[in-house]
Length: 120
Figure: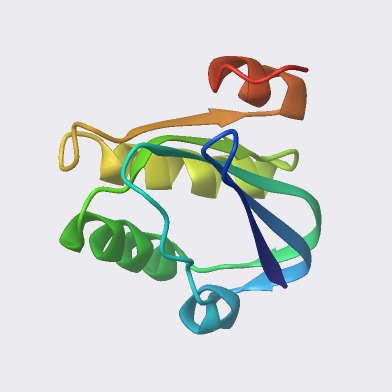
């Protein structure tokens, strides 16, 4: 399951994934329309199992590169080895295509929030 929460005052889109994370979750997700320059915190720490294929990670990176750049910085929190590996794959695929969007992967929320310039 994927949930979105946009904090207009902070310019932050919080994306929370929980339970079993599968390809279909991203295909069916309705990404909110956010202003240019928004930061994103994708927290997967509540994911219990990852059923996300490397092909879906590639597709997500392609989709994110094809539209207008709205996200300035994306911090991904991945606490499992599989989740961290897939998030790093996404980061690598995303580099260079949207130089205005920086993607970093973290193992804990505090480090991700600090990189985004948010309080711990």
